[in-house]
Length: 394
Ligand SMILES: *Cc1c(COP(=O)(O)O)cnc(C)c1O
Image (cartoon, rainbow, N blue to C red; front, side, top):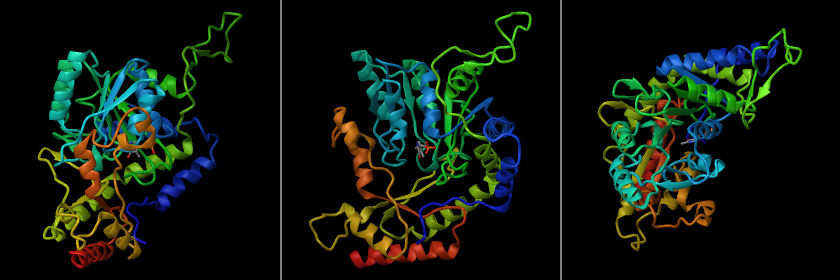
């Protein structure tokens, strides 16, 4: 089976992890701050706060920005559930902004319309979370301009977008946001097994997130002349969590970060081959906006052939195409089931029909295999099988 995505671990990665196992520090030691500083430098952010997953990073990012009961966070329905769940952890409400059918990212026009309406009803969001779907950056200048006008904060969910650029700056530089979050889950572009990092340029936000990831405990400098404090002394100043990244993860992440340019180049190469070799099939291929480069985490296609009357039984369903490709050993996937249609979000009042662009996109979506270790022969096999199945079913 050719999987849709896969990590790539080499001898240097393994050696980095083994070296930590043989050192004195398994949890808190030098690797975590080294990884934070290296990634901050790579993406041109001031601070990086490493945690045990991007989900945790999104949670403490929301907490640090003051999201709580009575507040609302808006995100895209075309994302993994974690982008919305982080607001629920804070007892806040979640709402969604439909996607642009061209980019599959949050539509700035839809955001504007929804903001005008929310202002009228006094239900403006505290945080808006654009998601750089498939690694393609959102229209951050417009979202940022709306943030200035309507007074909300921005967290970029850049789980797919490490290495992407927007208007000549790396995603993660937070030029148009408060916080940017990356994921290092094995299926993403670089991995630390589990892991995530929140980037920002505000020292207070960074300090707050550091506090929240580790029980809300500070190690205040001991006043050695006081009988009440000493080297043992620490204070819990807020209710924090145990979301720390461990040294083994940081060592792997740091080693993988050295390989990021190679990973990105191979993904770009494969993406361009797909763009070229699929262009005559009845498909909508992912767009590339000028002034941005995608990190090419996914290669999502839209099956245009489904567009025609589905009552004509010769038209394939997405399911038929998916199943046939899987049976041929092609590990296609579907990203994403719109979050508002998940049973949990339906219990909160959302329903099918709420975000028609995301639903239409989902009905026609298929993600083709794309990862660093994929060969051109494997890619040719994917293209051949896809062309076959579209032909057979057409
Ligand atoms: C993977 C992913 C997450 C969650 O990342 P974890 O590191 O697995 O917690 C959040 N948002 C998006 C868009 C993702 O793809």
